Image (tube, rainbow, N blue to C red; front, side, top):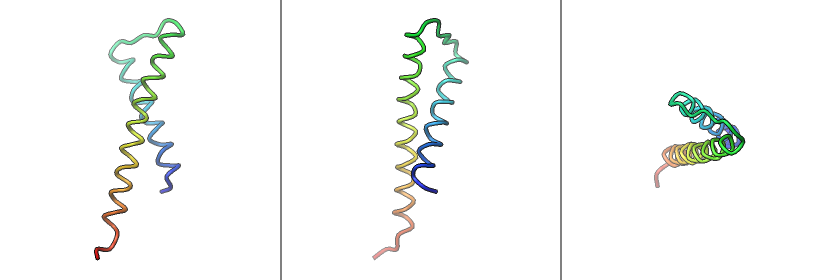
Length: 68
């Protein structure tokens, strides 16, 4: 799977998980500032998800390399 596809999926899942979790625990954004804060925090969670996905991909690639 290409890196772009992995990153896109990680961003989508990261945002979706964060927004659903925030809404389930009772975060109800009322004004624009609340929505911006929610989106920024979602971006940070998505960034962590991307980092994790890329780390796993590099680890798998290293594991599949032949040993010398």
